[in-house]
Length: 306
Image 1: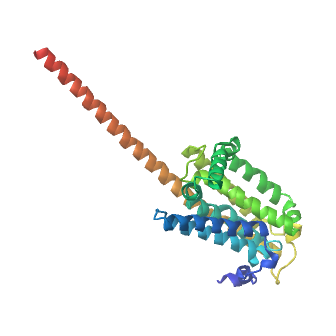
Image 2: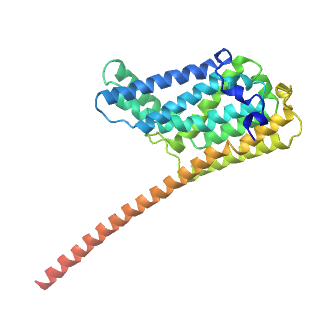
Image 3: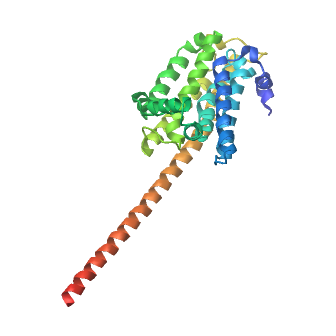
């Protein structure tokens, strides 16, 4: 079954519609992309290495960020719960990993000049990285608290209808979800130096909590049988709002869970690699200590013979 058979207005999601765009996220996407490409091109022009796959990942993240803010899906997000859920899931679970895998922090350090304005930028970046706010935001409990506070507040009440009723509210909410997604994804995906590195068990707890929240909210939307939100109770192109709501719930069970499963696999793989690396280091250290001990015994034996 095609997507437009499920929702007739689905093709309209991917038509450029800047008049109904979210300017905060759209402008941020363009600025981030321009800055990153400038830094990467500067490194390449000075014959310094920079990863093409990392560049590709970051640029794709910026493109997706621009699309969900300026294409039809953004306009439909205020009237279709499926469009809203697609937009928010993309903002929280798809865009942040793409941006973070690009290692923007490392690019900033390598491409920023160490004199004049560049020195001020680097000092500000270092100060921000070492600040209490950075350590607080990277605490493993922060993503859990955000998820447990925001999702029930929006979807277990009718607050989502109030927020999405105005373009300003919709734009601010989208920007918030992109930011919250980045905060949650940095400890899981980043290879840049961080002021706080959560343990792997803490990372797994974060992932499992997010999976459970998506599953519970998705089940509520699927099983409700009637529109739960006043702002999403009007049929769009003859689509029953309860049906649109159920499709949104299915997105939470499928589209929202796939990136989290990828994160789970990556997290377990990194944990296994770290344990193997530590085991090899411990084995090498034990072998060195054993060789040193054997040499010590051999010296004692030689002294006793003399």
